[in-house]
Amino acid sequence: QNRQDNCPLVPNGQLEDDQQDDDLDGIGDACEPDWDGDGTANEPIVLDPNSPDGSFETKTLEEVVDIDGPPCGERTVALAQGWNDVCYTGPTQSVDDATADIAGDVAIMYRLGPNQGFDRWVPGMPEISTMAALGPYDQLFILVTAAGVDWSMEITTPPSGPPELALGWNTVCYTGPALPVEEATADWDDFAILYALGPDQVWRRYVPDRPDLSNLTHLNTFESVLVLVGEAPELCGPVIPTTFIGTVAICGEPAPDDTIIWAVGSDGVVWGIATTSGGSYAMDVPYSLPTTPPCFPGGTFSFTCDALQAAETSDDATGVAPKTLDLTCCPGAVSIDVDIKPGSYPNSINLKSKGVIPVAILTTEDFDAATVDPETVVFAGASPVHYAIKDVDKDRDYDLILHFRTQDTDIAPGNDAACLTGQTYDGTPISGCDSVRTVP
Image (cartoon, rainbow, N blue to C red; front, top):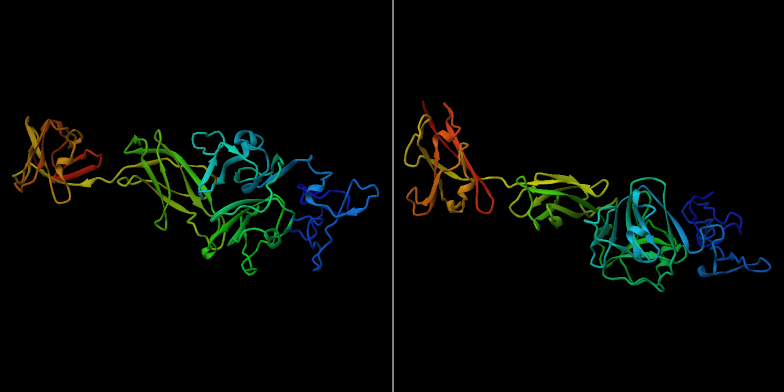
């Protein structure tokens, strides 16, 4: 017995072995033009169950009823564990309603839009989902986490005529009879390449007039395909995104809204951009399923936060999506020139002193000391008790001079250096050190 009807629009049980698949190509013998491979096309004949004498007559798809298959107007799609390219044939309804029977086994669902971008739906996560409803004959990429998942759906009236193809990638739900690809697409507009995703997670392609490059031979009824109109450089295959989600912290604090997150591939190209909201982000990056040659990185991406921030995390785009990746971003501190006790050397520190230690942050060609926020400055564990902008080193630019109580510092006997940290007014960390000589 066949688990899934492999010739759903031909009546079963009326012709001997009419639902068998002797050549194991996934197409029922009764549907295949030359099922026995003898080079002679079979007669397109099926049994008319309404004929009073039981005679055989040629019938169109609309005239045939699948007697022992699903009820008229319904179909069941067997979903493989992993990626599935599915033609949704049901009515317009919310994604939650349409997928009620399978949502528990779905990790994520994508739909390619006319702008060549993807909408996504993640079960139970409306905050990152951008797809709210499904329409008849939408093509869907579905990542399924379990084996043996079946999706039952209605069969609404299919669109008439050939598909309308636009420049770029097009999603098509093929609704004709099972035919060789060149016959099934004979009345379509010119296209460069057609892909179909198999249950083995491998794309198979058909290139018009190039049998040497084609490994897809037939299209079955309700098969989903991706069609590229325009040039197909290096036979680049289609791509299914991977969605990364998570929190973003900037130097330990939740990132402000609209902080830009970038995903940079190993090739140096930016493959994903997102903005934060409420300290979180959701980003799609391309991941190419097996195809020859691959045209997307499909591997490790490095994440950065805004132009001045450096992310500490990178991750691989493969695996189950959505992938949770929390980012902690903090720029490296800018090294600054610090002068402890300006005008003196060595910089002797009397650890018993009840006075203050003057420390200058100097302006250079690469750094403006006036941009430092004095309230963020810490020197040897102490905060300043006084600060002022002045030309400390007499080079006709403005430096920042700060004073720290000696007893507030953590300078210890024998220390030969003391360091200062802080931030500029735009949040850029700074740090610098100078030599000291401790005096008992």
